Length: 112
Length: 117
Image (cartoon, rainbow over all chains, first blue to last red; front, top):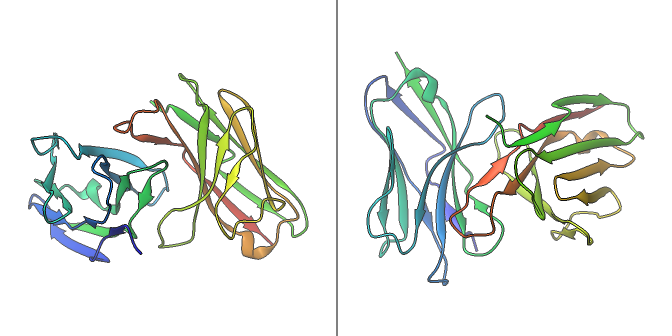
């Protein structure tokens, strides 16, 4: 069974607008961590943001925020004020046991 | 700056030859490193877990004799693709957790794009 589901193969947004990338997960472990990574065309994986299952507040890192809805098992990434440099693949990942399990990714395209 | 260094970034080799890819943790000790493979426009698929001082753990369907992993020190793991074939052409990327805690993100190398002709 798929542990991480990213239902959007691609998203398109205009510069300066906000965009939400969806991620749902499945685990029976009460302790887990959720991560978002950005992968530009050059291939490197860039860590963006982390949310722990016991964290009371939604994680934020600059323009990135994680909309964590535990009961729905969703951990959507919100990027505010999109920039052209945000165009990339975005992967949601979960750690309930080592190592991370990745979703299939969402391609984000930001247009001027 | 980068905390995990992977080398080479790109390699082209002939069918039947072997290719070694190195993954180094730069400012921390990594008793565990992970090797992933990524086909174009697809997600990262875990190949194996590299353990310092012991044998690597391979995921189902990954040939351990084909993809040799050696974790020789606390800062270096190598992946050797033996007798490479065109179907081995892919993007290989290593990663290591800075700590063993659950909220520690994996740090990734920049990846190696392997092309087998």
